[in-house]
Each structure stands twice: as structure tokens, then as C-alpha cells.
Image (cartoon, rainbow, N blue to C red):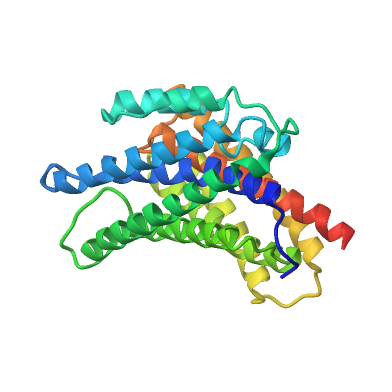
Length: 313
């Protein structure tokens, strides 16, 4: 640990976290809802309730974030992209699930840190963090219930069991980061860089695997590219976990990971464009494509920050 976080950093980091993860949790709920069959309408209703509750968290974060969050975060494409609004609109048309796109429209108008007194927001942000912790814990329990039902062959959904494990893992990370912020703890950046790479390399590998398995079998070129990217990230995960011999420094590993993540990001961006234009055959809902693109953008921001910090270290 490296001391206690300043109030302005607490406010900014909390709101940046909600802009990313609050939207991610809302969309997890949408993907869960879209995957249930008619017999499990009660599960779909519960998922829709989570969607609405996370929309409230995201709306509050957007309202508080104007003039507070960093320009770097706003420009990173991790909370919204130039494709998000269209992906929401098409997904709503295809699924019949109501998506509060007005939040996205408002978020597109956010301005970066303007020097306002952020400490005045500390109480509101603390309350929002606590609300999100409770809500995300409930979502973790819901995801666990779904996974248990699937593994016991008592529940069918069009989502893979690994996808449920994957999105539950992200929810647990959101909770962990919020609880750290609530304690105003500043994390050692070297250790944080290692932990982030361990986590997101696995997530990126699984993204590539999901894409491969959700593409139509005729999309052979895209499937090959997705599989090759999965292999790259499986290898990077092993390196960071210490499972591969070598003398690479953390800085060298981070640089290699940046290159691989850029390649995956570009693949996801092209794929999202292809899906929105109805030029790719798959069972990938458009918002899922934009969702995983934003996660790659988020990881790239983390990696680039780590690269800068390690150079200063």
C-alpha cells in the first residue's frame, strides 16, 4: 500500500469505475435475459430488474461525472464507443429488451475534468459505491444460481457456462475495486499492474474463444483469427502467472501484451462494424460485440498507464 487516497482521486476513480463497470453489469443482465427460454420467464424478469437497477447506477454516475473524470478515460473508448448507441438500438430491435439509450446519449456529451471542487461530491459518490456493491453482490448470487442450474442440467440458457463464470468474475472484480475505494486505499502500482494483467489476459483469451464459438461455421477466416488470438492470450496469461521460463521484465511483458491487445481490439472493432452492417453471420448480438470491444479498450488504458508507471519506477 502507498498511503491514503485524496478525496478528489477517490471521486474521480470511483466515477470512472462506474462508467465502465456499471454499464458492463447492465449489459451482463441484458445478455442473461436474452439467453433464457420461455419456461424460465421468471429468470428473464429477474435479469431485467438487474438491468434497470444498474441503469440507475450508471445514470447517477453519468450525472456526477461531468467535469470530473479524466480526458484520458473519456477518450479511451472503454465506457462508450462510436458504435455503442447503434449497437443498443439494433439489440433492442432484435431482442425486444428495452435498453435505456438516453444514458448513452448523455454520456456522449460528458466533458473532462474542469477543475471543479470534486471533494463536494465525496458523500454522494460514497453512497453510490455502497449501492453498487450491494447490487453487484446480488447479481453475483444470481449468476451463481444460473451456473449451478446449468451444471446440474436443470436449467437451459443459450449462454455458455464459461460465459457465466466469465461475467461473474468481472462482477467480483468490480466489487473488489469498489471496496478498496471505500477504504480510500492507494494500491502499489507494480503489484496492481501484475494483477490486472493476470485478470485481463484470461478475459481477453476467453473473449476470443467466445467469438470463435459464436460465429457461423462458414466464417472460417474469422474463426481462425479468433482462435489464434486466444492462443496468444493463453500464452501471455501463462507468462504473467510465472508458468513459462524466461527473463522478460514486467515492462517487456506489458509491451508485448499491448501489441496483442491492440490486435484483438482491432479485430473486435472490425467485427462490431461487420455485425452492425449485417455482413457477418453469427449468433453474436451486436451489443455483445461492442461490449467486448470496450473491455479491450479498458485493458489498453490500463496497460498504457502501467507502461508509463513502470518507466518512472
